[in-house]
Length: 286
Image (cartoon, rainbow, N blue to C red; front, side, top):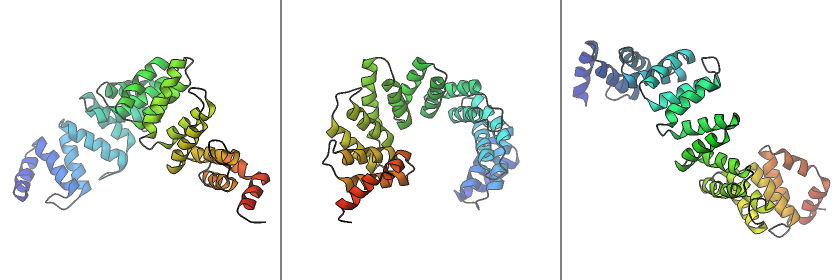
């Protein structure tokens, strides 16, 4: 590998675009050269100006993150657009992010959706999710469902959760039942919010048969994942003896952990003297 560095340097000096790009890679990673991010950026920029698409993306990414150059969101967007126009999916997604967030440009949700769609149509799961989210906010439920579904099938947990929410809030019973499937898929990927919502579904019996034992089981799983809402609901199960033997001490413990994670309902519950006194009595404290 060392033998290739000198020819790379010579070719780069002679204006060879690929050599400039790969020399930038070597400098960025410290491959047979001292790592130097400023020099790497300079090489990437040389190649980017001459139209090397991977170099254009690299320049954009480094300007956005401030690696080897000062942070400059507006310049990053210019380079992302150049790479995006030539089909780089990640660049298309990042252009969408800039427009959605108003990062280096005036916020424009329509343009954000346009760029997300380009990346989404090439199979990018994150773009599919962001596009679906924007469509859902705009009230375009069927289109949002389409893109959530694609991202969810690709294994994106956030999409699985949001698709389940979409189905749960449907007026059609058949669609509401689909929510269970997608909550379960996300929960199996350690998504605590999905496990909690499964527990709530079984506790309330609105979209499936009421089953307090199953509800408690899902709340336990959510609590193990650190979900604050799951911890609060598990505390309620222990406090009221629903799906589990009543245990005020365990309820108090669950509320305490949930409150520590910022759950306001748990904080209000802890403020009730009756519960605290019951927990203390159960612990043998008078």
